[in-house]
Image 1 (tube, rainbow over the protein chains, first blue to last red):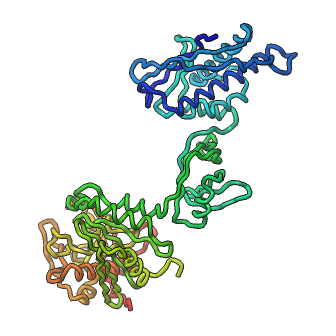
Image 2: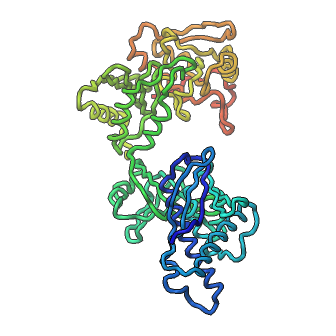
Image 3: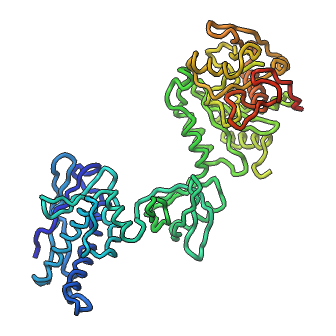
Amino acid sequence: MKSPFITPRFEGGRFDGSLPIEVARDLAAYQDLIVALAKQLYLDQHPSRQRVPKGFSQGFRLDLEQLQEGSTKALIASFTMATAGLLEPDLSYFDSARDLVAECVRAKSENRPIPTEFPRKFLTFFNAFGKSLREDETVDITPDPNRPAVLTASSRKLLALEGQGYYFADVQLQGTVAKNEWEAGRFTLRLLEGTLVDIPLSPTYRDQIRAAGGNERTMVSMTGVAAFDATDKIRYVSTVSDLFTLPNLELSLEMDNTLPIEQGWLDGEGEAVDVDLREVVQGVFVTHYPESLPYPHVAPTESGGIHLEWVGSPWRVSAEFFPGSKTCELQATNASERQVVDLDLSLDDPSWWEGVTSFVSKFIGSVWD
Amino acid sequence: MFQRSVHPTYLRKDVVLGRGFMPTEADEGLLSGYNSELINASEAFKHRTIIMGKQSGGIWAVTFDEIDSHSLPYAGSPIETASSHMHVDFNGLDAKQIKAKAAMLAELATKRGRRHPLAQNEQTPFLGLAADMPLPSPDLT
């Protein structure tokens, strides 16, 4: 048997006629909450019972019957309740659970205490239900069109915090591997601003983390879910959905940040850096830059070329790349002795990269010296 | 001293990159700056940023002796809003020579330190001399 159960109304952001998959996952958490709450309500009504009747929840499931576009940026999902084998009196507990969840959301949005009959332990379901909502998105889960029960990203966070003192949310983090703890099955990521975060270690990316460990230039980029406290500070990462490593991210970021893509950067003069040249230079340097050498300073030239400069003592080395040219001009200068050494390399020579690193090593030395 | 306003693109913290002391194509080989005997670093910075409306990461300087030691001519080249305006002449040099001399001047200026603006905890480099007065040539050897 099927009967209408709820018609959540999604508004804003991405809800332009389709339902993102992660939002659909949130609705699975909503179903879990309804089932758990219905059981609790049944037990509250039958204090003499230790458990709900056999088959109480097995026959219950929510089915998405229809998606339809509402007014501007609104999407209405119609869910029916499939209740195979459930007895009529028991169905009411699911309806009551639906109403109570809506009242809980409504109360939070109106800054009222959540209903006393809603068990606080079930607020943890809001770690999953509504987790994918973005700041400009809402979902109204009211069964009563005259009394909205609108869940937002911030009210979802407050509900989860009220339940257990922290909340879960999606994260994208970048940092270096500060510590590996193989036996404990986790590693510690030092974020770019210095914060340390524990992350579970799975066999899927164990080798990547092993290779990145101890290498401050290899950045780890991960997406997943993290627990945050009431001050929005990460406490730990609970799950990792994707992880990859990036060599020489700092150098890559400096190139991204310092090489202009628009003309006029030099007080009205200055060409944008040549796109093809940038791709060649950035690609090679970021992929192959040796750990032993200090990073160069990166700057554009007024003609759209790229200027790299290593500042050592007593030598400075520069490498200049020209737009439309296959030449790399290397130059080492020693201001104290007024010495100059020049070397031109052809980018058509497969060994040009070795030529650059050899030249820089000779005059600047290693970071380990 | 020759005081040079360095574009932020060619500064990394307190390091002046070689291009910070290199004339651009539009300069036609003449690297512009200010004569410290006629204007102090603070006023030069104001002139560059407020009167000229140009970007500046600060004022850096090399002595006339240091410029001489690189066989580079220099001369005053007053403009309407700054009688202290001057230039160092890189004409007659090929591109690599220009780059090398610019890098060495930038190194000397970096070692001397920024002339303006000074950080709050920075003192005038030599006690008894104002920030706009010539410094003795350092022995870099």
